[in-house]
View 1 (cartoon, rainbow, N blue to C red):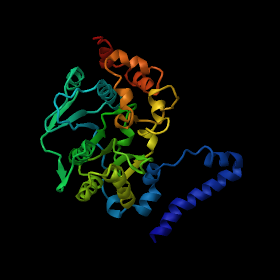
View 2: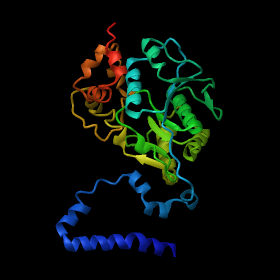
View 3: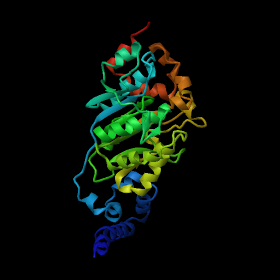
View 4: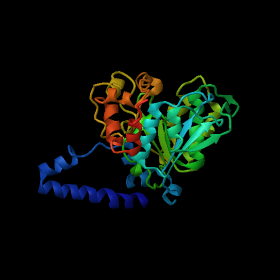
Length: 334
């Protein structure tokens, strides 16, 4: 039956080919299939034909591939129009433009209130401002008082309704995301694994509109508790990923979430400790996890120079070194 067909078509040819190679070149074959193999990630497994044949429901296999729009959504949960938009957010916005080259960037401002200040006056020319008039004070009659939880709900609702890429304002982008946006047969919710909290990271994630994984996640906010910091974001996402593996592509933590804000992580981002950011598509800067003490030193463009020898400074130079908008920013002296 189907299992015998799968065995003959997939496993037998692989075994025979490896055996033939081994007889011809034992040492070379061992190197090829051991030391030189790259590590296998969850995304590799999910994309494999064997995994899809064994574990993906037939109705998903029969659907047409769905791509993710190259549209970025940013969220500002702010109830004080006098709060100033900081310089580090503007720098991160410039990296989104340079690295991702999105078709559109939407800035969703809760209750119609965005931020103010000179850096906001520059930023608002580069984004389409969306006034979110609905109040995110509760969900399914469960009260939401913590600002981070309000932002969680808004980002889930926005990506579920419109599709695209969500990016936290304290995340700097490094390289294009195109290979993460490709059409897939299922596995359409793409997000990095967050190892410390043992769950799915939501500082950056992407999905097409109407993604079932996000719909399930939002539905479970019926049981939301505002007092639990990561219960309904990172940890719940992990449980859902285990239940519905055919709906998610988890990518390695080092795509966006390393260095982490524990141990010497912040020193590897902002200090002189080395870090190779080659695997990173972007880097979370952990504003609320200790990174804010570094980011708040950025008052004027000349302050960027203090990070020149750090990973953060090297990323800025790599991504924005040739950017006209960045050169214009550096020209501001007072």
